[in-house]
Image 1 (tube, rainbow, N blue to C red):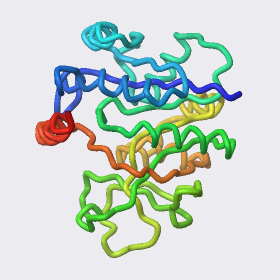
Image 2: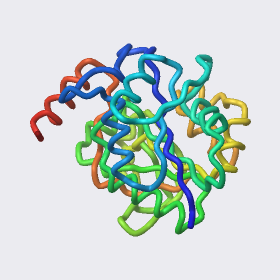
Image 3: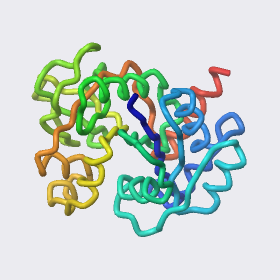
Image 4: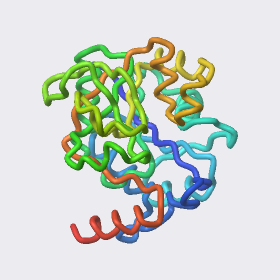
Length: 246
């Protein structure tokens, strides 16, 4: 049976909303909400990878598991690789990188991605959702993924490109990318040892490093499009939604 480890990179020093991992929704921090969603997926051990003692203490206080990492990582992927090495858990086949700022991520989407990775023996996998609002196509804050084929519940097509550009004039196989990644362990090690590409740095999208180096990224359909907390407005919006559910 294949073994998956879920790692959640998190840090206090976010550019647009510093301290966001510890902002509270229903008296629980955002990072601890994400941890609990990952645990509910029940696909493997869950650990938060952080450079901040405050985050570590919050996760532990709320019954989670966390590990301290260096503070000079360029990307979240580099952070989770350090955590993986530090944890020294044997016989891990897949490492799932879950964003620490999406507290309403759907556990079934996490489970589905993991199943696709195993069934397809894929190198790298991620999620995307259908775009129901055309305004998203020209919103530079929304990352779009262009696929080789139409995305459906039962397929796992290959990504051709990821972009923040205005794609309103194009309408073929474009979806809203959701920042969750699953890596075959050997591919993650290969990925973090690759130099950042100009394409990646220009677009601020680390998945482009994989495509630039001919690594294949497959995409599964997410039934639910989570709100990432990047700004104060995002936080207030997701807080309202999640507190209303109670």
